[in-house]
Length: 341
Image (cartoon, rainbow, N blue to C red; front, side):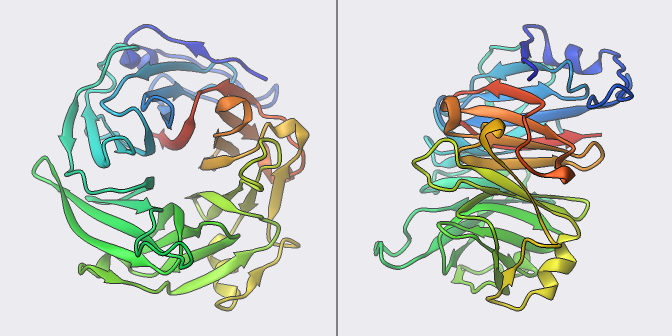
């Protein structure tokens, strides 16, 4: 396992410094002076933003920044504007922070753009163009015996987050992910994934049924969802009260496999999925994931084991009881966003 070195310099200086490493010895990422690969993490424990420079997984550096939140879940980084956005569970709003690369590690970032405080229990953030979409797992109708959730759709324009509309779902929510114009959503408390086709086309407040919902065989309870270049990662928290029974599934050619399963039916493990789980993984409640398709690395925000960890798994297509290549303790680790260019 690799340890994380905390950087106390300007974050930008660390990211533009030239460094190269070879993967001929197995496992590290090849980088150049001009490349960028950063993993942005949020925390339930303090609301901080932690940025890991992951260009070279054998020599990762990190910088943490305070925010106006004390609890955050859902994060996105816009490289064109050097701006990181969080969904605040303490402030119940979206907050964007600019000039991240110019900030000194350890300082408190200043929110440059904030939405109105309309969220209730935000869990994930997905971005498509200027639309910032937040999944919220609060009980909508006040009846715990009926499953429902809510999706808040904000539009960013003119330096403001404006709530365009809200969508009520017929199931509880956790992770969400855009793939083209479709929004894929984790059906909380189940092993199901739902698709909303052309999700942003509906601009009215409404209850919307999923276009399709299927079960993912082998998962007990899924939370995290991430797609890159056709490969989908789904996490499995197992029993939420146990910190050692988690895992994640790797599903290549996900769209075609999802389309081949009838609505309401099950995507079998055999021939379709690879599962990573076991005592060596440190996985208990993995609640967020990101995937580096170029280097075949899965990043996981693990919430329960050790109080919170950010983990990286290499060569994941092999599956099985993999030990993480990177194992960093991060209290309350809640969400991740991988930025590469």
